[in-house]
Image (tube, rainbow, N blue to C red):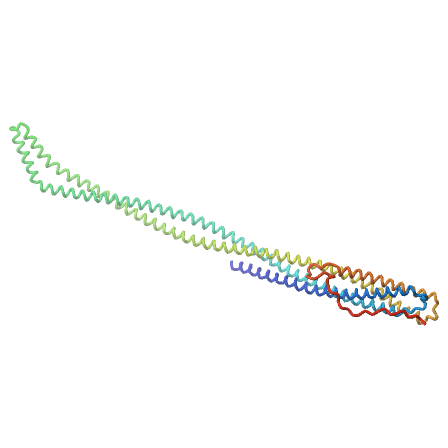
Length: 449
């Protein structure tokens, strides 16, 4: 029981630790990724600011080119170099944004792994909890069965004790009835003894009367011839008186013997009944002791059953905690995946912008070399070649302007997106514009002498 309770307690401690870890991961990851996202925004804002400046400067410059009468007299090397430097600055800001996006992606990946680790720990605790729940239910069922059996035994024992008590009451009543009967017989014997004693006393006092009766008898017989039968009646009367007294005492003694025999029998029966009652009382006390023992046993089993039920309830609460933690972990990973997907979209967009800028940077570098060469040999180049080179440089600047326009559109789209899931941050556009360095103006037109 203690081992099971300790296991459930350890599981609850582990779940509390998992809950704290998830909470910490949620807060830490949000802060970390939010900081990286803020860095992406800042770098993106800088790049867009530079791109807008460069595009505006180029637009103005291209308008000036429309009014140039003789393009062969222009030296566009300063503008090409300026444009290359501007693209390098924009590329650097976008590269920095890419680095921050990469760092944010790494943070989301690390958070995902950490959350998955917590999820695996929760799964392991879930497996342990299943074992504990199974064991607790098994023990609870055993305790419930034992409790039911003990209650059945208690009920039967109480029934037996009640039956014994009833037997004791019946036997006690029968014994009391016999004692009452014996007392009545004792009184009858006493009365008989009194009657016999009274008879003896009267006999002694009437001896003279008896002698007189005999005398009357004799007289009556002798006088019979003279009294014509009257004397014979007198003689019979005297003889009957004497004989009646003798029979009375004998009957009383016989009745006393019969009564004493019945008393002796009752004494024996009373003694036997008393022994039976004593045995029944002993049995009844034993049954009462068993009742008390079973009641204590039932109380103990009920307490044990309640402990198992409490452990089952605690395990069920832990199961609910596990379900909740699994939900939190799954929701966290889902949110992280959404953020990761959005960051990957941002990264792809930045990569595309960076590739476009790098490609145009190469074109500008090549063009700058070509312009420098043309300027150096301007006297030896044909007019047609110089016009063609001018148009090529102009077209390149227009292409760069288109690239910058695309970058500006993509960047503005990113900055206007809503806030990301999983992050407690403001929408992309809902931030103060960063303070950036003052941008370099495009050089003025220079004519070749």
